[in-house]
Length: 623
Image (cartoon, rainbow, N blue to C red; front, side, top):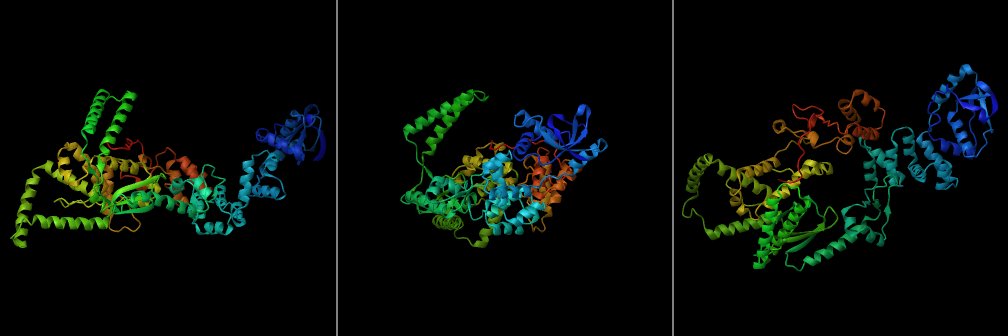
């Protein structure tokens, strides 16, 4: 081998260069680097025809030099330092140079950018020098500020770049290392790392922040920290105490507006959730008779509404449908305007003021703590019983018991022959349990225990099935009479098919297929749930999809690979074995998208790991 200075116009690409893509990628950036720093490595060439030399190693450098010629930054006759190789060694040299060359580890790139910045080079200057974006430079410098120990773990491939980026939300190296050390391998997810590092801060999309506004927070001296690697994220508030103070002031002002309206008390619950309201029983407002003018207006609107519905039952005329909706809203405005709270009800009930999940003010009227409500109900029932007197007055308790046993046996016999009455009684009892707080019991001893499934977190609460049930629950509630005493007559007026729909809804709330961590003696119940799933043709692939949040991020690496192997192929799973857990989870989610794979616990007895046919989607509203 000899070193020779050769004119650029005598250099040509060689067919013996094993890298066919050598002159395709990043040529402009490489040309910029050569123009700035010169050619740092010799080209490897062999003698060719007509006095030319074929470049067998350095094809990208040759393309970059010719790019500079085209830009008139160098002459085509410029001498280039080349190492001349024996033609018989050409392929060997080309293959060896390309095969043995290792790309720079990302950790080395990160530290190289940091060194340039430490030498006084500005972000823009670095970006221009290496033909990269300023954002990329800023990201590298941010990564370089993470704990050196964690950077070393990244260099050793013990974590991926996404996990390293998650640590940049905090500048506290001690806190960063503590989070990494305390998290188990299977849960070292970027979102978990950020959540633990930011646990003392508040997310900018928190309902409380929406309620008071970021402008008010900043005016009070608050600051926001943004995550460079999550540009879509609104940031983290560094002084949550300011938000809490502003929330308290604003809620107290809202509460003061109701304090003089005759309510027993006005309570403040900063963040109103489904669970916080579940601690209260709800009283109902009374209906004020409509005036003659209101009744006439209501009758006219109702007539127009019914006529339009009849004329456009095909639902094809959008303008007519919009008119129907407008009329329905006007009808609701009149009927809802007739509701009012009697003074005697306000005297025993409270108003709860708080923030809804959407960050708006929420005011709930007519609430009574459940314990207090039960005590009031017992006192009322006792007073009513004393006033009416006992129907068995003058008879001893033993004879009353014996006589009512006769009555019960005869009642059961008659009920057995009257299916309609039995259905009505069952549905009434279940509706009382489901929709009315501590309503007086019926004579039927049947109850449904309703597990609200809220412990499953956002993944369960926000699922398609849960949202559909909540929509249906509210739709049914809106149609029921306000007074449980009117329920029997209301039910009697319904068609049997409608009664059966209500029965199915109430019964469904009592069904549980939940396998809790320390369940004993429940095999029969779970077997029953599986039988019901078979009977109703349940296909969980219509209601659940394997994602990082719903599955992969919470199971070990082996379980993720098993899912990929089963749903896609064993070869695909083998190709992903070397990925770190976080990267593997994301890749598994992508590979299984649309595949309809189910883990064994979600399959029915006859079900397959991958569902074949889709089920009819559930409707997010009651019929």
